[in-house]
Image (cartoon, rainbow, N blue to C red; front, side, top):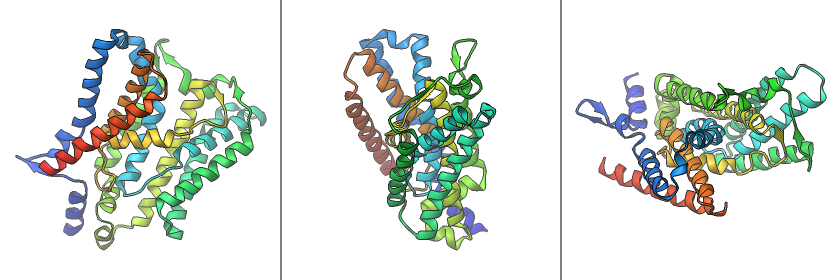
Length: 331
């Protein structure tokens, strides 16, 4: 048991400084500094960026990515990757809206359908990886294409609009007519993710197997079980993000979720989670998602073409990873 605890502590990257854990103080330094620097730039270039409604819109647009990033943090911390998350969102969404539009049953039951479908798709990913011993990267590329193919078969070139209020309220409703409920849900998911990572065996064992898989096995951790749980968890959150996205847009089309895997992984990397596994930064992923939404919003306000966002995000990723590498060397 002592050996197991030592492995888990080491894998979570905890370094003590005068009785405190360095990771506690440094977890959000990189993305927060980037947010502050970008905010200063926008304060000079376009002061209207700081209008309350615009700040709310930034968080609103980031809600789905925040939810997905929390799940991706667990997957990457466990030394995995999931490239199918956007396709899982789309397939969960299309089955939900098909139920609502064509079954004639109570629309409210469409919400758990999205969650169940997402969880099932994530579990399939995990089982394929564990049982067939196919690398995460290859498996999730295959399911990304396969899941998207099913969406295209079901949705084709058509778009669906105007769903019942009980289906879209999680993504559409605003408290007091101002503050979107989707933002609160994203924050609750983040808090739940932080609790799971810090205070449960799910989080500790995920970090352990990501930090050193062989040592985790020797310590008695069922790494296959936790690998499947990680993919089931991100699948569940993909279903939740589908509910938020469909509700926010009050529509669905076959391209929903396309490229969201890139945005999600970028947010997690910017947030400081190690791509090598073993170190996850829940609050960092939240900050990374918000930073990306800020950059996209800022470029729109500055009237720069949309494709400049890709260049900006690439630069943010390179700078963030460089900062973390330099910090790791100092530690």
